[in-house]
Image 1 (cartoon, rainbow, N blue to C red):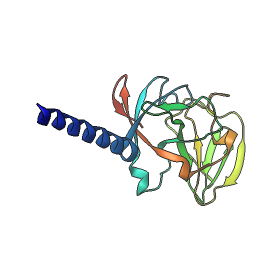
Image 2 (image 1 turned 60 degrees about the vertical axis):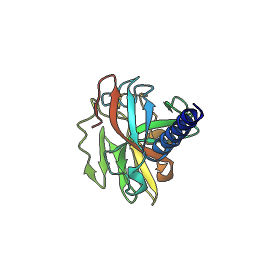
Image 3 (image 1 turned 45 degrees about the vertical axis):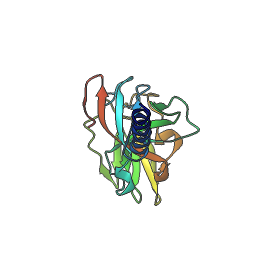
Image 4 (image 1 turned 180 degrees about the vertical axis):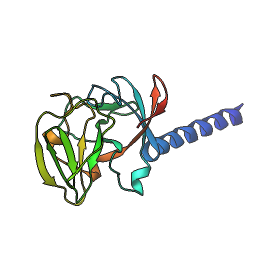
Amino acid sequence: MGKEIWSWIKTLVLAVILALVIRNYAFAFYVVDGQSMEPTLKNGQVLVVNNFTYRFWEPKQGDVIIFNKEEITGRRKNIFSSKFALVKRVIALPGDTVYIQDGQVYVNDQPLAEEYIDCEITEDYGPITLEEGWLFVLGDNRHQGASMDSRSFGPIEMSCVLGRADYIILPSPHKVD
């Protein structure tokens, strides 16, 4: 009986350690809170966030990322911890010049093709050139006041990026586009 209990304790401890390692270094789960990423992401959806990819590769234009922005309220919460974060789409990378004019987003003087949005931005912005280590992010919901993003708080540091939103697992599982 004592050996069986000890075996259960070792198994449970190993499972907890493995779960913590996976959560911190492989993936985490976040709940979307709000409408800033509609129509791509809806309020209440549960996202699988890949914490591993950006340990080896840099974010790419078009990636949907989760990042910390401590001074912002109304953030997404990690299901298994007290971390709060924002979810936005990467629009411009270090060295890029970004601006918004007449409802169109431009990166390096090229109009950005954005099939994932359902309306244009109503106000102009920029131009700004991003320094090394910084990203420009926007919510997919471009309706007036619907998304707090780099237009309101400026570029974000890459060191604040927690991971890439890869999959929606609830309510209907599918890949984030």
